Structures are given as structure tokens and as C-alpha cells.
Image 1 (tube, rainbow, N blue to C red):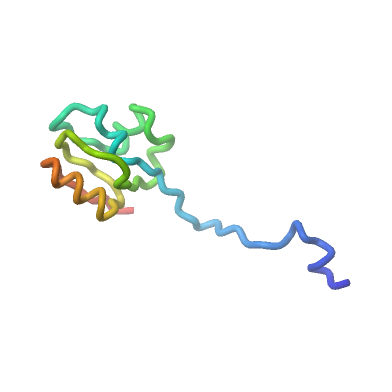
Image 2 (tube, rainbow, N blue to C red; image 1 turned 45 degrees about the vertical axis):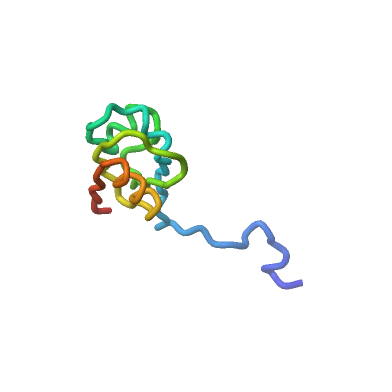
Length: 95
């Protein structure tokens, strides 16, 4: 029997350069005051993300009722449309 078939637990590949995104849905952002500027550090203080070092992605699940400025590394098109519809702005950060 070939060596790779004798060791099934050794199969696969783990990418050490994988980017772990900190995901935040727009419905969770309603806890912030209207007009505030939301940064990754502020998201960590609120308990919405675990590590400030992880890049933040804003997802478009839910409804947004307040207008504020969001700083994130990536924003989905649905989330950006909902943020701008509520009167807010999106600032993209570098990775």
C-alpha cells in the first residue's frame, strides 16, 4: 500500500498566509451613536471583533437605521448601498 494511503491524517494543505477576516454585519452597528466614526478599535471595544490586527469586512445582513462613517478593510456591495442609503460614508483601509 502506498505511503500516502497509509497516513490519511497527513493529507491536505494548510495555507499559512491565509487572511482571517473579522466579519461584522450592518445590523450589529446600530448600537453606536448616530454620526460617530466607527474604527476597528471601536469595534473591538464593543465586542464585535476579537482582534484589531485582523482586517475587518462589513457584510450587508440586516437593516441600518443610523448614519455614520465606517472604516473597514473591505465592504460588500450590499452593505455599502445600505450605509449610503442611511446617509453614512465608507472609508476603506489598507491591508
